[in-house]
Image 1 (cartoon, rainbow, N blue to C red):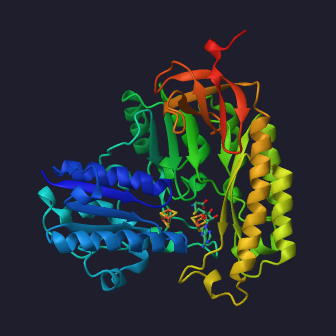
Image 2 (tube, rainbow, N blue to C red):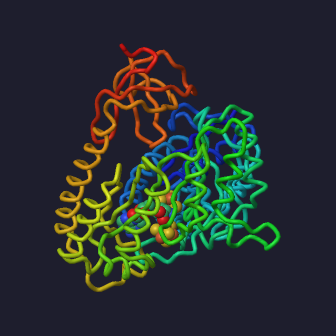
Image 3 (cartoon, rainbow, N blue to C red):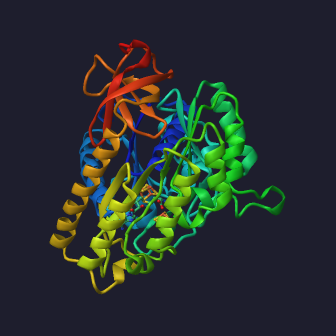
Length: 440
Ligand code: SAH
Ligand code: SF4
Ligand code: F3S
């Protein structure tokens, strides 16, 4: 039997797509290798959101090239966003790559790899003609699953490469999504995460006969027996309309956690980023969400050093972070991406300034995250058990509905939903013990 090994970079959508790539390769009769060194087919599912993943990929492909010199029949396939951004140039830069394909043409990979993992072809890019979700999945987690609701993005954020590599937004039909969620529930899945580049604009491009909105989709998923937790990522602040907020508030399974990318706290920079909201609209949305969903946890994405960002603009970002008090935040240094609007802007911020700002931001973000987590001490949180703690094999690990990782003492098993008493907190995790074991 030929063996494959898939290496995944990037966001949750890529994690989802990799499960489909694996499922498809297995349907062709390939088995999974335990390491890339022992594989006959190597697949790299790439990301190109910032320069860093590009550089990491170069190192991975360096290793692959060396293995191929020893074993010329090794098949090297590069998929995902970097492949789509580079197109034919990928073969010039990495001539040992056999197959390359964009995120919209994953199903075609089967034609190229062929039954048994032989047969090699050049790439297919930019077709965006099929949902990876329609392929069989080899899921990595038993009780949690990704569910793709759309592909592509119609926004035009000035810094972002995603619209160029993932194409225009296309929504999956609601019937197909709900059927998949029901099938997952029947397999024992308890938590689903609905995925889209702009998940809450889902549905607007559907044919009039089936057109609905993201709020309706949340309600339909909530109605599926066995699904205890529903998450979704990433929503765009501009598309948070009332029916979506009402659905989050009213659906028992929809978790009290929203990832709400801020990007910048300066209205001037938000405008240059083409985010289509300003500071006040963002803050008003936070208030509406918190009014509707008591105990809501908020996460965010923030970019520092966008072209033209002054010290004042950066201070405005720090101010919004202090005002909102996010439970968690992913912080990024602006990275120019070829072909995007911002990459061509004249007033790029010097590297050392970007780094200083990131450092200052991380300090504030971590302090607030720790304070937010410390507020949970003494409370009982419902935890979905995922496995053994990564730091202490004597303890279990899981997540709260508010999406915080908890390491705890207990006897529960993976897939169980248990109440945990929180005893301590750091900026990223909580720890505690199962409520049933707590001393009263
Ligand atoms: N579709 C999702 C995810 C986009 S990528 C969304 O819109 O939320 C995830 C994050 O990477 C973005 O939210 C942004 O904060 C960051 N990002 C995107 N392009 C970037 C760039 N060129 N440089 C630095 N960070 C970037
Ligand atoms: Fe990129 Fe903006 Fe689309 Fe998100 S909404 S994928 S940041 S263009
Ligand atoms: Fe990266 Fe593509 Fe996701 S660029 S962040 S893998 S959409």
